[in-house]
Amino acid sequence: MSTQLPSVLPDTNFLIDYPDIHKQAWQLRPLQILISEVVTKELVGLCRSQYPMLAENAERALNVLDVLRNGARKEDNTYQQGDITITFIPRPSRVPLPLEDKTPDHQLIATARARLTAVPPHFCAILSNDRELCHIAEAMSVL
Image (tube, rainbow, N blue to C red; front, side, top):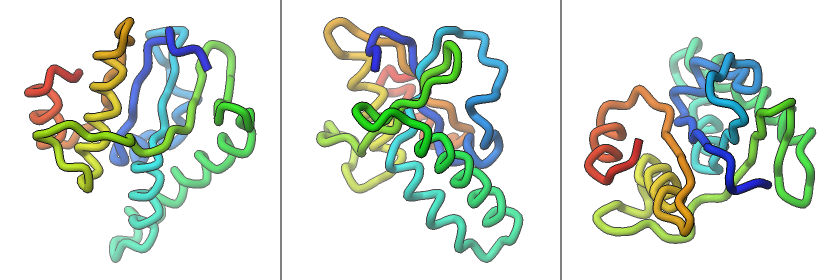
């Protein structure tokens, strides 16, 4: 896994809307797409939603991610397709205050923030339409 690649971190709602993440017309290339364990766990829960369309879309996103994960290199959980790298990552081990370590959105923000504040820093943006997540991320200088 090249940590020098600019990266994006899709939220659950992004993957529900755009499950074929590896087929998107990304303008930024090369690009690393980080798939957090936090998001896959949320998708599993949404598969049991009382709303059939939401459950179906969550299941479709999980199926796509399963195919990508099965094609990933075992040593670094990375799937490569041309200049797009998809990396499956664990939950962050540390979530800095004022973020809450049990809140999935805060875990995504902590992951992006850790990359942005690394030495040297690495570009990382969260892809989400969740207003609260976006406001908190912005307050913490996360894109």
